[in-house]
Structures are given as C-alpha cells and as structure tokens.
Amino acid sequence: MEEFLQQLTNGLAVGGIYALIALGYTMVYGVLKLINFAHGDLFTYGAYLGLTLLTSLALTDRVGFALGVLVLVLMVMGLVAILGAMLERAAYRPLRESPRLSAVVSALGASIFLQNTLMLVYGARFQVYPDEILPAATLDVFGLYIPLMRVLIVLASVAMMVALYLFIQKTRIGTAIRAAAIDQSAARLMGIDVNRVILLVFLLGPALGGAAGLMVGLYYGQVNFTMGWVYGMKAFTAAILGGIGNIPGAMVGGLLLGVIEALGAAYVSIAWKDAIAFCVLILILIVRPTGLLGERVADKI
Amino acid sequence: MNRAAWLGTGSCAALFAVAPLFLNTYQVDVLNSIGLYALLALSLNLILGEAGLFNMGHAAFYAMGAYTAAILNTRYQIPILWTLPFSGLAAGLFALAVARPVVHLRGDYLLIVTIGVGEIVRIALVNDVFGITGGANGIFGISRPRLFGWVIRRPEEFFYLIWGFVGLTIFLFLRLKQSRFGRALNYLREDEVAAEGSGINTDHYKLAAFGLGAAWAGMAGTLFAAKMTIISPESFNFWESVVLFMIVILGGAGSIPGVLLAAFLVVGLPELFREFAGARMLVFGLVMMVMMVIRPQGLLPTRGRHFSLAARVKETGR
Image (cartoon, rainbow over all chains, first blue to last red; front, top):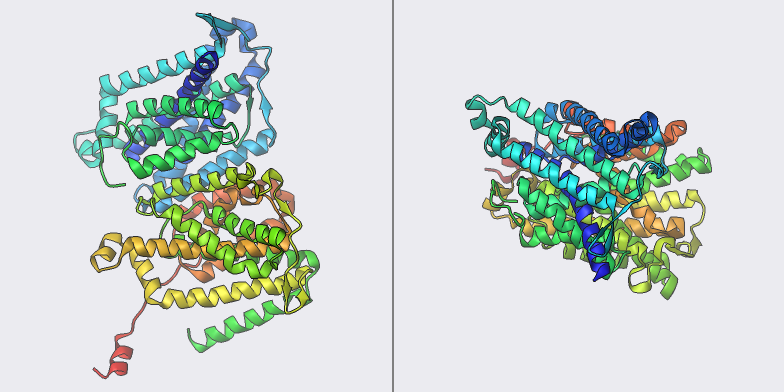
C-alpha cells in the first residue's frame, strides 16, 4: 500500500507536468488544427532557462526559497512565451494557407532547430540542477512520507490548470479563443482578431510548457536537450487521451497518463516505461480517436 | 524521356559506376552510406511520396529487416544475402500488421502513431525482446556477404553491391510508378474521396504501399547488417526516421530523381563540412522550415502525368 501510494502521488506529479504540456498542444490544435511538434522543445527551453536563471541570479539566496522560485517560474514562463510567439511568427504564420503537410514539416524542422540550438549552447550532456538550492524536505501525510517538491508540483500544476480554465471560460478573451477554435471565419466576421487569438494561444501554451520544464528540472534535478520530444510525445498522448482540442480533456488525460505510467513502471516493468505511453496512444487512436472527453468532433480523424 | 535525356542519364550512370577507381576508401564508404540512405528513402518515398501516408517510423521496418538478417545469419548460419527475402518478408508483414488498424487515420495522426511504433520497436530491441536481439549491445559477428563465391569485404566491393541494388530498385520503382498500382497511389494522395469514388479500394492500396515500402526497407536493413557486421538499436533511432522523412520531402515527394539528389545532399554534404558536424541537425531543421515556405514541392518535384491525345488517337485509330 505504501509503495502504491508513493507511485500514485509520483504519477500525479508527473501527470500534472504532462497535463501542463498537453494544454499547449491542445490549445494550438483547437485553433489552428496543427500539431505543434516544437512544443516539446519549448518545454526543454523552460527547463534550461530555469537552470541558467537559478544558478546565475541566485534568486533563492537573496529573497528566500518560496519567493525565489515564484519569481523564477514567472520569468521562465515569460521568456518561453516570447519564444513561442516568435516560433509562431517564423514557422507557422507563413504557412497558414498551405497544405497540412507543409505545416507539419515546418513544425518538425522548428523542433529539430530548437533542440540543436540548445545542444550547441549548453552541450550534449545532462545538465544538473544544483541540489543545495532545493529543499530536500518531505511531508508526513498520515504516515506517508512524500517529497515536498512532489506536493508543490501537483499543487502548482493544478493551480495553473484551474487558472487557465477560468480564463478560457469566464473572460472575454477566453471566449474569443473558444470562438476561434469553433469556426475561424465566423469568429472573424464577429469582429474577433483571429491573428491575435493565435498569438495569444502561442503565448499561453508555451508559458505553461515552460513552467512544466522548470518543474521537471526541479523534480528530477537533471535535464537533457532531447528530453523535449519524449515529454512532448507523452503530453501529446495525454492530449489525445483526453480528446484533442478539449482543455479539460488535456488535464484529465495528463493526470491519467502520469498515473498509468507510474503504476505501469512500478508493477509491470520499468524497462518498458517509455513504451507504455506509446501503447496507450496507439490503443486510444484505434479504439476511441476522439478521446475520453472528446465530444467536439469537427472532422473525421 | 527523349534521347538526349537517356544519353545524359546513361553517361552519368556509367561515370558513377567507375567512380570507385578514382576515389579513396573513405570517399567510397561515404558513397556506400549515401546508397543505403537512397535505398531507404526510395522505399519511404513509396509510402510517403507516392501514397502520401505520413510515416515517420520507417527506421522500425529497417530495423526489422536488419535484425531478421542478423539473427538468421548468426544463429542459423544462413548466408547473409540469402536472408534478403526473409528480412523483406518480416519487415513487410510487420508493417502490414501494424498499419492495418491505423492506416485510415488522417495524416498527422498517422505520423504520431508511426513515431510511436518506431519507438516501441527500438525499446523492444533494447530490452532484448524474446531474448534474441542482444539488448542494447545488439548483435555482432554477422558474416560477410558472398556472391558467386566472391567474399564482399572492401568498401569498393560493397559499392557495387549497394548501388547495384539501388539501380535495380530505381528500375523497379519507375516501372511501378507507371503502373496501374502507381497511378492508384497518386490518385489516393491527391484526393482520397475522389479516389474512393472512382472505385479504388483505398485501404487496400494504402496497406499495399506500406507493406511494399517496409519490405524494401527491410532488405536495405540486410545490406546494412552485411556492411557493418554489427547492429545495435541505436542505429535505428527516431532521428534515422526523421532524416529519411526529410530526404523524401526535400527531394520532392514522389520524385525518384529528387529523392536520389536529396540523399546525396543530406548524407553527403555533412561529410564535406565535417568541422560543422555538430550543427548538422540544426541546419536540417532550418532547411525544413525554409523549404516549406519557399519551395514546398521539393527540389526536383514530379511533373505529373501527361497523356497525349494525338498519340492515343494514332495508336487506336479512333
């Protein structure tokens, strides 16, 4: 039972990270019907920028751990959001009227480009987050000792998801995003600036993805320039699992996939851990391509 | 093709055939790699270029072939070139089994699924599935190929084996392109609904393209195993699939000359600029983005089919 609960909470933490990345995929897909392959690499940028800012600014020494990490998260989110907007401008906007394949290939190219820029700047080896900055504290929850970082990640990811959900559902801008996702030309006729909506989506998604990257760095303590595509693929699986284009779906899919993977790794086989998500992906596409919560089916997959 | 084009192509081929006489061993070895990639890209071209099915797990089929050849050779002492049909068959059947449930998926979903398949195959190989793949170390001690009693060992000898196979592939695939089958695939790529409406069994043709392309990649895997004498899962990782995908897109989907040219550029150019080897993938990524904006049809796109009415009238007399 102890082990089960440990794996479950671990799965929820990883799942929260998947969900945050998955939101980026699902929002872009909702508006542009495009799989943003470079999203996973924006996530990696979050992890690397977080590392650089953490070590070079020594924020946690100056203003204390809690405030330091909060400032760090905000800085990383801001920077990765800018990067996301630049990506949209350079790789996707020129291809908006082109056939699907062109945009997909351009997305892949952007992914490769971003990944290799990181490699050339930081080197190909694993980069380690300094462990003296991070508290190794554990929380005692009814006799179960859970690392503090795990709890923080679950809380932070849930908080961000709730904030995004409220933003999309309750504000005027959120309504514009939803309208553009349903029908772009109709939204344009209603006076919505679709270009700005797309730009906003490419700010919001990467911001969340960047935060997720920082979380992975803080949780596992090490980052690698290729990790974006594994996490990206898994988060994409999560988005499909919940129903692509569907924001609550991405959240549910992410948490579910994290738990499935953690339990599968613990009870089935650790060596096949990375294959679990891909099997889930293939199964869901065969059995229920619209995903668990995918009620909104624009066209046949 | 007219006579001048035939002459040009013929003389280029002849010049290429004597190239090993003037090049050093390293250069010939580079040409051999280009040949293997050209072979793989031609096989992927059948799936991605002719039928328009986004397959980014081609390395999985390549791996199936290479491992089938290596296992048959090291365990059962079957001469490596005799394993060619078996590795083709294994890769083809595997592709059919994998593609059967997913082949109807729309483009980018198929892309994701094939990436997933490629990864699952690689993880299975690393985990020494069925205890026969040798885990992360792979399989070594694959014997040298023997052709009519002649043991192929030096790069110059492999040059003729590999490029001979490339030549055969080009000939067969050109014939296939002209056939009813090739036309059906192109129709499918351009407009699936219209193709289905004209009585083309789309799933059947898609599967056939997948199976045939994968079988060819499997045979290329045999040649790879024979050339390296050692294979490991890392030779078949995701980036191999990406590079192959890129060769086809860069050259022009469905264009055999384009694919050949792109194989030379993508595999050969990094060898010329070795000091920038680290930036190889960076440049690839950038090229993919820029190409899609300025020349999405590829370097040497196909010109489409032309049928002359006058010639047809003369032929049938009506």
